[in-house]
Length: 120
Image (cartoon, rainbow, N blue to C red; front, side, top):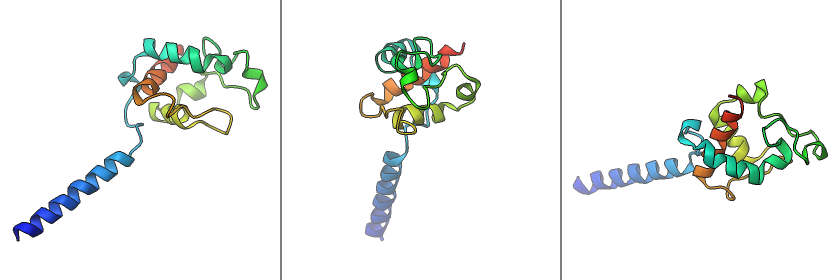
């Protein structure tokens, strides 16, 4: 009986570990990010398309089809932090690159926090 209990406990713990590792990082909110840190990464990776202030007016913006969106738009402001994080991490439409793997989890959260600050 003791052995059976130990086996079930092990199965439960292993299952919980597998589920937690497979969950996206998108369960956090922008409040977990640092907009000052995000600004540095934004300038490095995003400003060329989205512009210094997120207005979609970067030097590469018109070279993409469709053009880079305004990060200060109502559409972007209405996204949840999780939706915004997913786009930054995974990319979108084959034009917006995926930054997961280039940016770590904290840097992705910092980026979300900075993008949110552009609309304030």
